[in-house]
Image 1 (cartoon, rainbow, N blue to C red):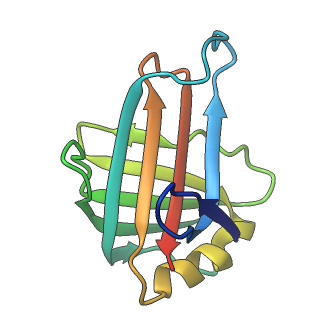
Image 2 (image 1 turned 180 degrees about the vertical axis):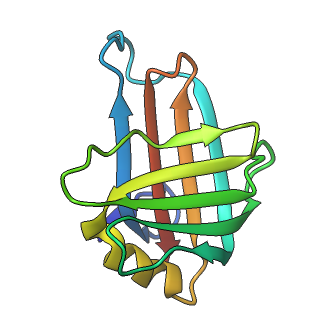
Amino acid sequence: MATITIAQTTRRMDEVSALGVLENVSANARRGPSFEPGSLEVVRLVREISRSDISAPSVTLVFTARPASKRSVVDHVHFNFLEPGKSIPASTLDTETASIHLYYPIEELEPVLRALRSRRDRFCYFWQAADRSRMRAWLFTPH
């Protein structure tokens, strides 16, 4: 689990625990400015509604979610943990089902489960470039 420190100009520094920052850049991504417009989904995880067998080689957890920003529409987040040796696909935003699908290697299951079981607020961010060439997704719990 990584700790990200966010500096604010007039207030004290806030810390958040971030888990599994997932990033994907397509092979044909063009080089450009460091800031690219796109879409951002921010959701608060509410409760677990489905879980596959934890002892299986691949595990899926599904959580209901509540939008945490005015533009967010996602109401479910799927955490997919894939067996060793499998290629990890890029995380996706499915606008038809209002779901985020996150993919992790199975080795990340325990740290993610610890964060999901915590009594803290749990948030999921998903950013995608306007041309869909880049994406970044992460789960975090504020301290």
